[in-house]
Length: 499
Ligand code: BG6
Image (cartoon, rainbow, N blue to C red; front, side):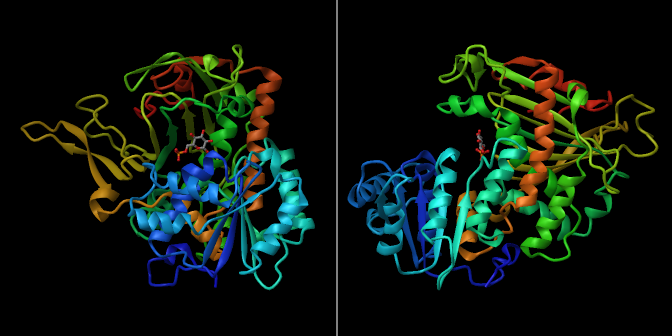
């Protein structure tokens, strides 16, 4: 049964049929840091009693060794706490196949050693250069076909590095798996606060009437990180902020905040509306990259009290690299609802504070009664989705300062998940893994979403390559990014939100 995620919690069953989950790249960071903790959390909640987890990697391990490793990972801080017995029980249930991705025998072993249950979910947690080989092996071994059960594949980003390579990869996966068996993951869609964007917009009557170009002056989407590239310098050099964050996470957030109400809550109705937003983005191509985009790169500085090196000094990074670690875009949507409203997107590493948020900045009232008395006295109202940290929603509006004058100040009305529900929010991967096992692709990306997002991003990357503009502006680690980003605001009354 296909279950609607927005209905979860309304008493519908959330337990997948018995299945084998094969993780390709089981020796990697993603498996240790995200997948195993998420699976363990689901296990603790009793959500996946019939799920068999099998690691698949070329590392010289066997099942005993893998079990011991998994058991050790369960003691890390990222993993929900539980008794030693419960951790032992989880770890002793995992399986392992040692094989390279080129060896057909390893894939044969999946079919023989884990013949039952016939339902299978494959997770590509490997570097993307292995995707091709694995998908081909799954096809030729027959594992991608649904013989008496289901067979699904979860694909991690990056899905390609431009429009052409993304299409080639999507086509290759499509030769092995039909679209309804493919789950393209964007972990941001698994975050509770991101799911709440739709509930907040379409589950209430008071917001939608003002959610358009008559009332909204502009929208800001910020994804600021304090982290640098860490050990991922090699990968990051080939990616940069636009490929790493904008093409996927930021455009997904943009589509959720700008989409029309779906006709239904099933996966396709939602994908349909999201893709319309992505298709409506006005291209930023050729010379326009110079005025509509900003790119930056961090230099050494102090982040959260610690001195950190510049990007060019990071391991695996070219000392003359021009890869952007900060990017900002001014995006317009060619749609009835949003024509003329700039969506200002920015993301960067090594900024002063870690924050992901979406803010709608409303137009000022038509008559500035109070501004006449004191210029600048009527700051615009703002509605902010705080995606992380301190997840919640804030509405900023003006209030009279108590006393004999009519002076006012912006005050906040705050909804905070922590205090409202008093529960820890589940990790994004937990929700996404469970959905894929249940056969619900609502929170995954459909092929045409990936395609439209890449079409837009590829034009920007090509524009940068051809024109060399705008130059990559250096910014100090621990700052709010390059000053050049202010140029995108356009109107002197607009400000980037303080980080
Ligand atoms: C990943 C990017 O997709 O998202 C990383 O590759 C980034 O560079 C990460 O750090 C941010 O995710 P989160 O959930 O920590 O905000």
